[in-house]
Image (cartoon, rainbow, N blue to C red):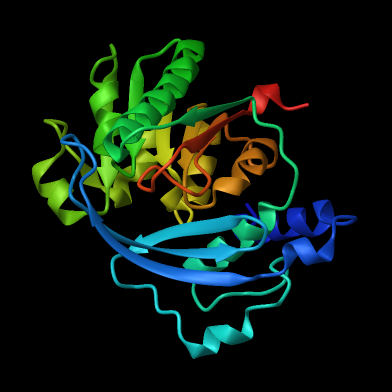
Length: 273
């Protein structure tokens, strides 16, 4: 399987033809460190993310303190986001995501959520789990793997009649589990996908360079794949069209932690024109 980022670069180069070059200009980059626990069901989140801006913002979450934007990045500003490369995989993803943000897209449905960060965190989790349950209903099974643990997703999955497994690279989660659910190492994610009817995967698997393996595993074992994408949110439609992912729920910036309404886009492979 061709590397996902290489595939996406080819897509944006082709689909970007005929669109104004000015829209693809990389205008800004941000590095953000944050600490937050938006709901009682969620772990204390200590993360960083890098954002890149064209006419929209692209984003990639990374380990805390690993975003390092310095004067050397000034040379990237003003260049074409379809062509420029960052200094890290996360920067590459954010820049390419910003380029994809220029392209027109047609979600299966679009939702707006509002309120406090806690309220929005729970609302978006309910939407994501609802989409996973729709795919599970179609599969006829009841085994769900949650890859890249999010406590709010686990919380809503526990309300359903499912057999639930989870994986993550966080040592504390592996040691303690989450909400009573055991968590195995992220190194075992492909096994969990192979043994499930639906795998609910977080978009950060693209940055950890594990998404390719999960897509191939799901295809081999006829597992339905649902991705929740904040990192690389604008890739959602191509995830379905080009990679064959069954459903993607994306959250473009500004995301739920910021004030005001947030947008969720639901993309389904079988709803593509």
